[in-house]
Image (cartoon, rainbow, N blue to C red; front, side):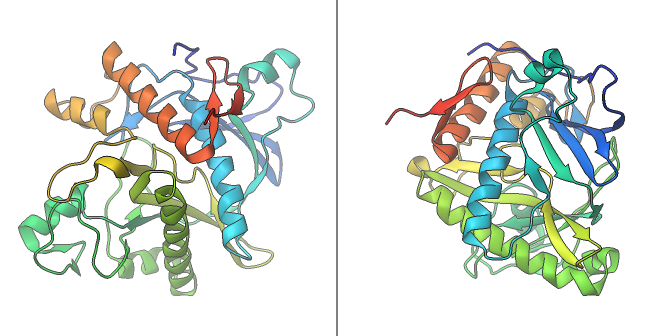
Length: 313
């Protein structure tokens, strides 16, 4: 379904720009509140493509808001940075319409400088390392596993560094993550990340999707000393989603994420190169995958104007 592609946002001077990330543009509302606006930019192998995926920003923003609601209901005491999907009242009407359903007001927090990655199934870089060494980031993995198999002892925590824009994240051992965030918070982050994954994986499996792995990010509320779930949550950008109906151990899986883009980049030896232009079939195929994941997980349909309605059953 064709739609408008937004590669860069412009608030018309009504809010000061704080930063532009790989996908999100951040604006300051006040000292304690930020506005996240999710563009249609897409990255792979830590590089941003020159063209985007229509309506991707709205799909990611609304999916994240859905997960915040689901997980907050499932885990008593869970805190998130989410405030509202509404734009601030002083944003002009023409800007408000353009960025509706792809904007999110959030609390401004100190962000822990790691990505909390949880893996339920062996695939990707973990599979590559396991085949060579029987380990991943120094973590011993039981012998005899086949590609795409679930870890027999349950999901594992394999954090990474949180690189600056244009640099590469590095997978690290949990002990190294503790050195970065401090021992006071490391175990809390690990336990919360695994709990979030388990609840989300069970929810998604009931809707026909396997969450093979995902990454969470957390912030610190200094007033309460609480670890807070932040950024995007359980989207096709931050997770590997597999269709449960076609799942088969011992081979790569079909996916509802940006694996088609990764595969195309690898086939052209373009991994890690910025400003690569995706061909139309990769753009269309990726949008369809993101849209299908959104519909399965949220029960909603997003039209080409970024409006939502309940999915037909």
